[in-house]
Image 1 (tube, helix red, strand yellow):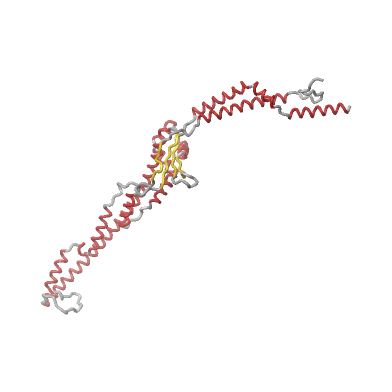
Image 2: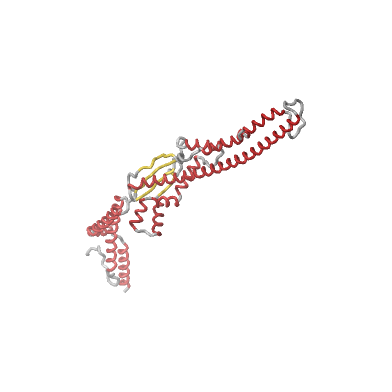
Amino acid sequence: MNDRIDNKLSARHEITYRENEIDLYELISLVWKKKFRILLVTCMCSCLGLFYAMTASEQWTANATIYQPKPRDTLELDRLRAILNIQGLAGTKSNTAIYDDFLLEFKSYNNVSDYLQTTAQFESYVKNNNLNDVEKQRLLRTWSDWMKISPEDKKGEQPGIHLSFSFFDKSDTLPMLTGYIDYIVGLQSKELFEILENNRNSQIENLRLKIKLRTEDAKRNLAREIEGIEYSMSIANAAGVSKPLENFNYGDRFPITLGKNALERKLAILKSLKIEDYMPEIMELKVQLNRLENISFNNMKLVPFSYLDTPSSPLRRDKPKRPLIVILATMLGGMLGVGMVLVQHAFRQEKRPLAAGYDYQPKYAKAS
């Protein structure tokens, strides 16, 4: 009785051991037998990968690298800045500040979205796909993410800032990047020259006001002086003083020491003087005003940066990487096929009845 129980327990332990044991030869033989099924799954996955690779949206990227402007690029602006400083005008930023402003403006989502809405590509895409306002905003967000700015070298070993724009149409990639760069430069130029124009107009108004006030003061002083000379002439005439008097000065309000003849001549000169000749400060102010009015910003060209690498058309496609997609799909198909075969084999093994209550005859036991 005990021997029979021991034999059953030994059989169960051997069964458990056989179940947990992995027979590589058996698995390899199984995979070889099912090779056509595995090959079929692999081919199906390869075809799906090839189909996706051929139909997936393409992505091309145009690139450029910029750095702070060189002296030859800012020659006109430096010359204008010197003239304006002489005239006392403010608002001309340094070249470094202008370069930093360009980078900030380039990053701005509002600037990117405003620019994209002016492009024919955006209008055509919206029209062809009949997008509503919400879909337009989503599209703007997506396309704006394709306009990127980043350091040329994250470690800081190489100078420059990298500008790029990715798009699904190769022919439109470079024009949209250069168009956006010109758009930002145009915004900067407009803002800078508006500030300079406003400062100039303010300075012109101040000078005109000064000229007006100085002219009024000069006319009033001239009229008072003419009136005083006329009184002096009347007194000199009554006193019979025609020639200048020596060592005669009582500090009168209307002195007659010059004599009648000299007073008449002085009066004639004062009456013939222009107001600018009477007060030369007015002429100086008018010269400053004329110089400011002759300054023009229309022909000025703002260059906020220099190119280390000019914008260029993409030479290779970024996405999709078709050979890689097909290779990965093929590998996935092969693994999926093998996995299906092994899982199916495992299920069949589990369904086999276990001879738990019967005498166990090992599979590889030899007949005695």
